[in-house]
Image (cartoon, rainbow, N blue to C red; front, side, top):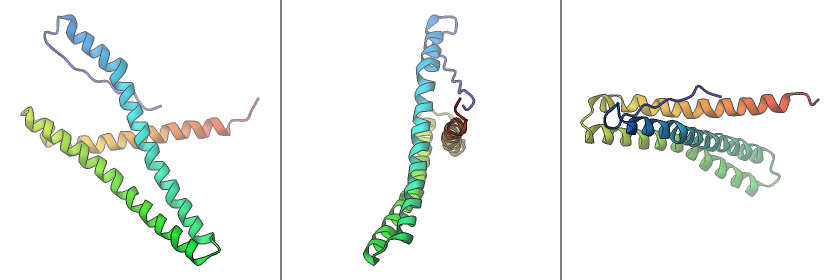
Length: 144
């Protein structure tokens, strides 16, 4: 799998138990939840690619003209979703980080919101690629 994501969140006094409790909660629940969200986003992207390929193959092999027209229309519609989906996700993450940076008066988040959004999308694709490569390697192993 991909490298683990570590999040450090300090709440209150560092010597108190609250900071370590929050960090423990984030590392035990928040990080796996984030990885699940990344995998779901990547799988949905791959399924969209597979659907476009399926409709293009159906367009090429369908015996009737109305079937080819229908398949071509579906391929075009799914291609739009394939482009608009990641773009909308990027903009949603970017706008959220920008709003958080502006609300918290944090210039680092505000200036780097685009880079952070791109890193999240890259992590989503990397996590999905590692999952699928592991599944393919497992499927190609000879049975004992």
